[in-house]
Length: 319
Image (tube, rainbow, N blue to C red; front, side, top):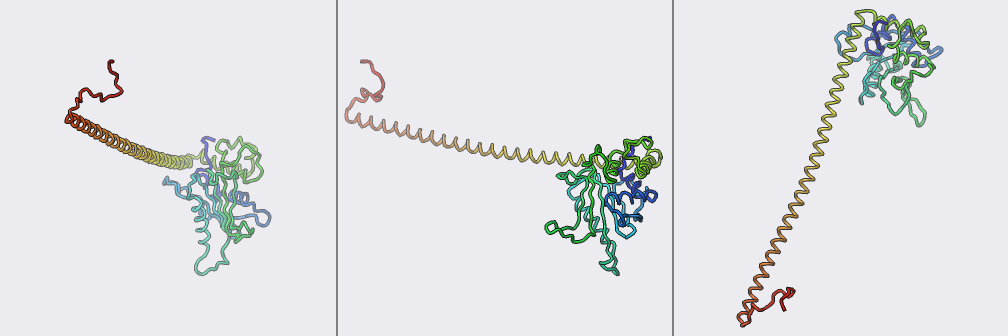
C-alpha cells in the first residue's frame, strides 16, 4: 500500500464495520465475538448509524460507535476506545442503558424489550490484573449461579493483551490480529492468517484509505486530531504531575520549617534555661561574696586579723 493505515483510527474503524458495503464484515465480526452458532447465528443486520465521512471532517474526537440490529431485533453496539480512564466503566454501562431504554415508547411494554450487546475494543487494558484479552460481563449472581436477565451482555476486547505471535485459534483472534498488525502489511502480500475472504475485504478498506487521496487526507486529519488530543492529554498529565510534585515539595518544606521551628524553640528554651542558670549562679556568687564580706566584717569587729586567715585551704603555701 502507498501509506500505512491503522485500522483502529476512528474513521477507518467506522468504515470497516459501519458502512453498508462492509455489512458482511460487521456480521462476521459480531458472530465471531459473541460466539453465536447454528440457528442463533446473525444472518443480517441493519446499521442504524452508517458510516458518513462528514461526521469526521470537523476534526473533533467525538464518540464514534456502530449501532446495529440483527434479524431478531437484538441490538448491537461496537466501539473502539483508545484512551482508558477511571470513569470508562460507567460510560460503557451508560451507553448500553441508553440503547436499551430507547427501545420503548409510552405505548409499548417491557415484554417488547430485546437484548442489547455492547462490544468495546480497547487499545489499552481496562483490567490490568487480568491477562485475558476477551472479557464478558452479564447480569449474574455468582454465589447462586443465577442469571437475572440475558438482556445485558458487554464484551471487552483488550488489544494489548492479545498475543499476535500465537497461532490463530478462532475468528475473534483473527480480527484482533487484524486490528493490531494489518497496517504493516500490503494487500498483495498477506500472511496466512489474513488470507480469508473477510480479511482480504477488510484490507481492501485500508487500501482505499491509503490510495484514495480524499480518504487519506481524512485519515490524516483524524490521526492529527488524535495526536493533538494525546499531546494535550500528556501536557495535562505532566502539569498534574508537576502540581503534585510542587505540593509534595511544599509539604516537605512545611514539615522541615516546623521541624526547624521546633528545634529553634527547643534551642531558645535551652538558651533561656542556660541564662537562668547563669543568673542563678551569679546570684549565688554575689551571695557568697556578701556572706564573705559580712563574715570578714564580723571577724574584724572581734579584732581578728583577717589578712592572716587562709581562705583557700587547698592552696599550697611556702613552709
